[in-house]
Image (cartoon, rainbow, N blue to C red; front, side):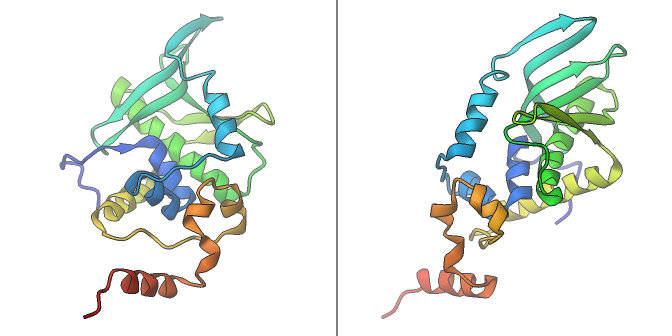
Length: 216
């Protein structure tokens, strides 16, 4: 499946792309099976976002900042909300996504946040008709930003995630557990997922086949 820019798609939530990039099974449990559980990490994230989830704006030192700005990109079929968008003096939007924890994450896990930020950038580009070459991730624990360049490599990764999510929607089964110790430990859906119960993807699909088979 490729992304046809002339086709009207059912919208994908920008935040769902971060879930997919983090773990396809996490995405499926939340967005396809409607499973969600809380843990310390999700509660911290909710507490953090209470600061930026109320729509509004302020102007300080000539910099306009919008909070909870609705987003859309018809070209890619995306919708969502930006935590914070700063508008630079020339009018260029600068998205800032808030995350709990420290910015000192494992590189491949940090890259999942980058995909979400890139999705916000392409939405802002369509909405305001300006290139968005850069954004930032603000990590609450370290109280520091990590600047992200929205380059062609990241944009290609975003498009791949969008295609993969649309393919996942068309399938009748969820992806198998990822079984990454670091990601699973932080995931609130670990109990629902039970990644330790299956040894490999083949075993997972074998279990699914037996689960939905009937005997005379």
